[in-house]
Amino acid sequence: MSEGFVVRRARAEDREQIGELWQEMMEFHAACDPRFFQLRPEAREIWLRHFDESVGDGKHDILVAEAAGELVGLAMGREGEDPPVFSTPPHGFVVNFVVAEGWRRRGVGERLFEALLAEFEKRGLAEARLSVAALNPASNAFWRKMGFEAYSVSMRRWVEG
Image 1 (cartoon, rainbow, N blue to C red):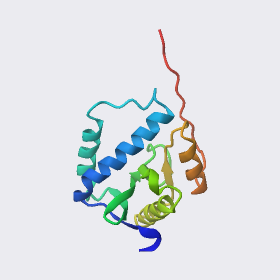
Image 2 (cartoon, rainbow, N blue to C red):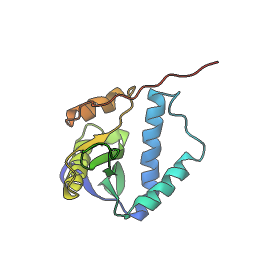
Image 3 (cartoon, helix red, strand yellow):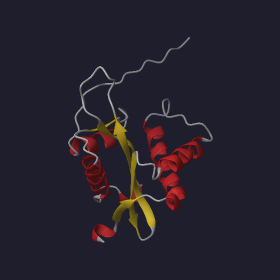
Image 4 (cartoon, rainbow, N blue to C red):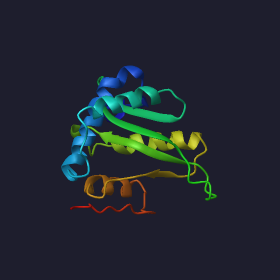
């Protein structure tokens, strides 16, 4: 076990620990942009139902980093398509990605992403895409380090009275 962790496929029995990682990710985002990342009280259970439906469905690749029986990272991806007016082939889309705070900057994120990229490659997907919160400088820096570049910008404006 190099670096003290292994990357493997998620299993149904990982549900609760994955829920904890997801919650940590959402709390991190809420701290970066509290106005946008406002969760409903039942958000975690809603997301866990999505996990239940996604694990082993053949459409999602869900990988975890595990250290001594504890999950310290999560990478979830799926195949995506552009609208039919474009001639672009299907692509891999990173849906959720988190490394537990105590495991950041220790190679977990890089290894998780490399493993997810390998899954995309097995599916014949030539490109990986994701959305990253603009007000999350740590994630933006990580994804640039992983070779991502902006190709579209989502914008918002609050409508106030």
